[in-house]
Image: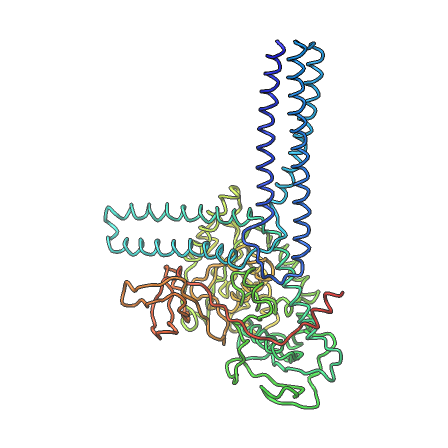
Length: 606
């Protein structure tokens, strides 16, 4: 009887020993794995890395201590079971009370071991959702390349199927089959994109992306503030920019951004001349906060047109269209000193960089903010919501082609179909901005199951005859503001209004580079330096209009055809033609700007 009971106890304790020992090993390995996200960068210059590593090592030590404690409990189990067996062999059957007491004691120790395992589990689970580590540049870029590749593949497949559908004819038996493939293929793509989105939330790097975006933005905003507030304005080197460029609102805003980038690149305080602005005679400061509270005087002891000399105090800057001796730091270039961090964080570094200047420039006066807050309440602006900007009037046929509302809304429907995978009961809202008031009524009539948010009065003021009025200015500011706040933007990048909304978006989210679909152009900046891509894989032409690619070839991109192919010129062979978009990566332009180390040091001390 004693030996039998001892055997039962041995099997029972042994089973728990295996379970606990196995769990210890698993939790130890999981803890180590989760505390080290994919590819931490060994070369990062992030000053917070040492603190993060120290905290990670401390948590690893805690897990190791818990592991040692559990092993000690197992050791005690084994020792006590051995003692029970020895006593049973020497003295025969133990009393029932003695056996019960021993089992109770073992049960308590097992419960203690379980509590320690649960505590270790909680620590590991907590670390799986967030991370203080900096991922490698390659990891983040590869993640974005996969997302882009899925989209480019579907664009190619759907375009080929649609071409095939046209060839077989409407009455062919194959037509319905092709339509079914298109429908199911779109669903496959949406589910894959859903999984990729979920992976980006589960990779443990969400908190790093949020913090890194805030840190980088804070760094640049502080530099711009310091540039615009020199210690002595009378001695400061200045760059003069005239707001009244002969073009519309979006073009003028981008003109000021260009001036500001040159000011940053020459380390000169930007003086914006805005009195008599065609949109508001009172000037910039009547709508937006001034670029400087302490230095607005354009005078100086020496004056010159661009480029002037380094010692020239005041330099007048021409518009970008007539600029000679173009500096290398014009868009789409980004500063070298933040290039690695920015390329790791963001899918469109040039747009983020432009967005930082807009973030500083477009700080609203209280009355402008109040106007927008009242409009948001009146319109019922709430999320989730898609923004679409339909460009018409004087631009169609000259700067842009006509795109019917159906083209926009098919993309809207696709977005909401995908969103329903995460939010089944989502209300389908659209913020609709246009310079044609009939577009809103047309959309409401054709798509009654959507809630359209927009003001036809804004569209009326955008007409050519009333464009340069106070009402028109308020309307365009409102449209850009609300478009930038939407979850996804559908528009034509040939429109500067659309591109400004996209650029502002980049300062609102850690990375909003994929939160758009353009019906025509890729992102660009008017007057930019060359936009290049780099071949990741070779390509042999399948058609006469395609180019040959070798790995590493630099291609100047002219545009994406949104059918799996882009068009450009091979810098090596000078061949113009089409090439598969999925085989390329961005060749980011990196430029040397003046050092702002003293400004950064002062900020870190405070």
